[in-house]
Amino acid sequence: MRTVFVNPERCIGCLQCELACAVEHSSSQDETVAFLETPVPRKRVHVEAGPVPTFAFPNRCRHCDPAPCLQVCPTGAITRDDEHGLVLVEPRRCIGCAMCAVVCPFDVLTFHPLADGPGPDIAVAVKCDGCVDRMRRGETPVCAEVCKVDALVFGELNELMTAGRLRETGAVLAVAGATPTGLPEGDPLAGWRAWGGAIQVAAAAATDWVAERHVSDGAIQGNGHAGSSPPGRDESKGEPQ
Image (cartoon, rainbow, N blue to C red; front, side, top):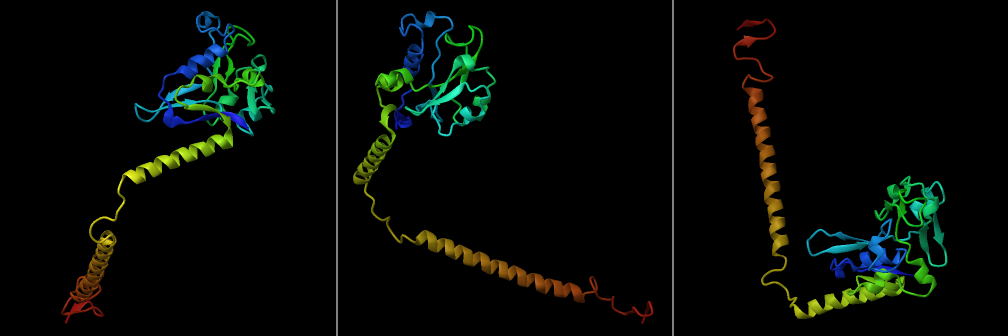
């Protein structure tokens, strides 16, 4: 199956994919006038900030199979293109109930009025359609076409994953070859030995504490304060001897 694969470690957050996506889905498909259209064309891919300032992630629809959004849509507005494995939204059938957004595990759906929607002021579900028209013409999805760092690449999924594994393996081997990996100086089991010794010391201390408690409890039993009669008193008669 041919699809767009994300390499998040390569994304530099340039937003070229977002701009190209919005222009591709505009009426004019001209970046010089697309922003003047009403309603404004909307992007289908979302570059989101990562956990650190230098990290970004181009989030897009995964076209799940089975697709939760397709399963819950009450009007049948969401369908699947079996030829290309794409989950598509028919804007004129969408009622904006947002059930698809509720069940989407990747948070890729937004709601905006569209030029081909039911009305200029009616918000409908907007998501990646895999550039289905371009794919039917044998072209590459526009987000992958404009990405300069291969954060978004298009091809056979298994081949892309294999290439990714080879790239990561090569990077690991390169680092391993450049960095000595000899054994640390001294006993390599020193840490484990110290840990075992600490456990033995703790166990001995616990045993001593239990023994002291037994001795202390026995002394209390014999000093008249717990479980014994005061000296010189006959409990059977309640009178001093």
